[in-house]
Amino acid sequence: MFVAAQFIGLYVASFYSHSGNVIPLGLSFSSNQDPFSVVFQLIISLIIAILLILGLMKLRAEIVMRIWFFVVVTLALIITLNALFSFIPGILILSFIAALVIAYYKIIKRNIIIHNLSELFVYPGIAAIFIPVLSIYSAVALLIIISLYDMYAVWKAGFMQKMAKYQIKKVKIFTGFLVPYLTSSQRRAFANAKTKSAKKKIKISLAMLGGGDVVFPIIMSGVVLYSRGLVPALFVTIGAFIGLGALLYNSEKGKFYPAMPFITLGCLLGLALQFLL
Image 1: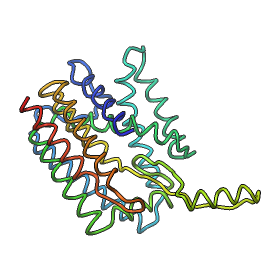
Image 2: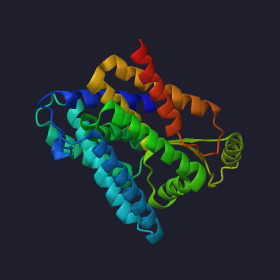
Image 3: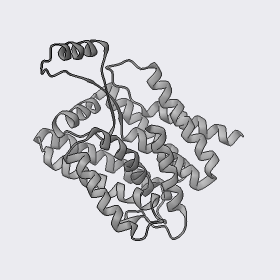
């Protein structure tokens, strides 16, 4: 799913890089803005968003959070669907309708399959807003800052785990990919329950990958696509995949890890390699 989202992101970035293909609803920065000022604005926005989420958690304002996520998901889907199906007449209106329907089944009806499928298209739409106004150096700076934040939030402060658990248990949504699975003990409990024909609630495990771990490598590869072309961008995408794969291969079940440092390292290695070739 991570790789699929990256390739969709590259296509969406390529679509909006062509003259005349404007991001819908005016959701774009001015082309005259300094790339590092955009990074600064993005970091400040993320800090404000995190503080808002923590505040809403304290107030137990789950409905407000659901409305917030519904709006963001809808807007991001409109951007992506408009790019993917641009050959269809009246696609902007159709994208708006489709985005509302998908957001409804994702956030209100809460279907796990629609959740993961929609995530493939949400992050390319978000990334498309920032890609055109960033440079390679500012994108690298963004990755490094986010990686440092990720390490602090997971390994030191621990509030990333709290936000993830709160989203799943209370808000009933999660910003990222979710893959349910059964451990060996959970499989045995499930088998026993089936044998006894008894209705019994069984806890299952979840493999999770946060949305930020998906969107930031899309931004990096999209910026490289703008600046240097498709092949260098693919190096970054492959590097991100290798970095995430290395983390998943060596991680332990039941533990939280900051994925961005590993993804960033992979992106930077892919970027360096394409410069050398």
